[in-house]
Every structure is written in C-alpha cells, then in structure tokens.
Image (tube, rainbow, N blue to C red; front, side, top):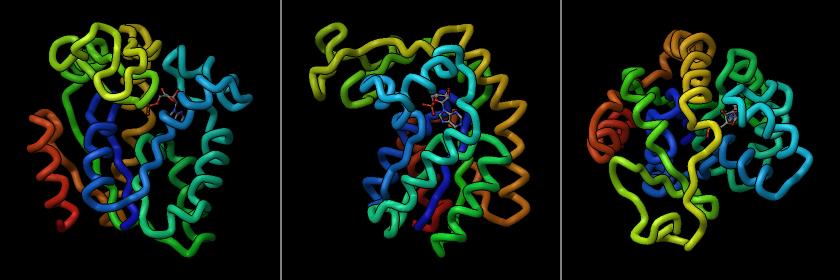
Length: 214
Ligand code: AMP
C-alpha cells in the first residue's frame, strides 16, 4: 500500500505516520526528518535546506523532488511506503506521479488530516522534539521526565527553529495558499480520505485505519 499523508504543520502527521507505518508495515518517508538529519550532519543538502527551514519557508521544489525520487527508488519502498510532508506543492505532486509511473507504482490513498488553524498554532508553539530520535513532546502535555533529555534515547529535547510564532505563521500561511491545492488535485482522482484531526491521537488513528479499509 502506497500512501500520502497531507496536513498542515502541527496536524499530527508525524505522530499518525509513526503509528500507521508500524501497523501497516510501510516504509516511512518524512521529508522534514530527512532534511533535519542532513542539517544535523552538516551535509551540503542540509546546509542548503537549513536557511529555508529556519525561516519556515519551503525548500525549493527541485531540491525536494530529487531527494524523494532517490528515496523512492530504494528497495525498502517496493513493499509500500508512507510519504509524510511530501508533496507540498502542485509541481511536487506532478513530479511524484511521474516518479511513481517510472517505478511502475501507484498511490492507493491520500489521507488529509484537518485541524483548525488556532489549534495548529497552539500545538506548534508548544511542541518540543528530540534531536536524536525525533520523538515529539509538548509543553502543555507530555514532557520528558528529565528536563531537556529524551525519555527514549537520551537525546536533547529542543524547540525547532521553525516552531517559533513567526515561522509557524509562515508555515500555516504556506499551507493555506499552496499545499491546500493538493486537496482538489487528489479528490478529483478519488484518492482523498479526509480525517478530523482535532481529537485524541488514538481516535484519529482508528478513523484513519478505517478510511484505509483496515
Ligand atoms: P516538516 O517536518 O514536514 O514540517 O518539515 C520541516 C521543514 O522542512 C519545512 O518547513 C520545509 O522548510 C522543509 N520541507 C519538508 N518537506 C518539504 C517539501 N515537501 N517541500 C518543501 N520543503 C519541505
């Protein structure tokens, strides 16, 4: 099964993706996580992406598309994948179609997690993340037992530069103006499954599995 997960920053894509890939046995491809890994390793790709990411801006399509095409061609994607954070623009969606065609693959479903903007803003600015394993925490909810130290891997728990109020505003504006165009794009092909994401994590998960026929 090949799935795209759509949703604004803070909609819970990362959390749901982790649960879904485990349950469905899919390879998880998060473009944000790939960029963050490259930034922390100081690779040329990371250096290029960082200036856009820190400002809450989208990395240019050409850079992201090249990276995702390479990733999809790897053997672990052949048994099913979940794209999280890609595509985010129409050119990215079109490039994905071309890339899948050339691999002889198709998309089975596009899950769009919807959450009101004021809720997203609150979630983003409260979010903290482990630099090591990517685990998500929240200053209004679950935080590590030891301040600043991940319960899971002992990595540093920090606020992402793109979760400040200014960067979060820019990311939500971009989603409304650009990424939301993907909803009619996939709806017209009968692939879109819309999920109410303004609920508890497990309720969203159960609904998503049901929408996928599981
Ligand atoms: P995310 O963790 O998905 O919110 O991504 C974090 C940041 O990585 C975004 O704010 C963008 O700067 C960059 N990024 C991730 N995926 C994409 C994409 N598909 N297109 C452009 N930029 C992206």
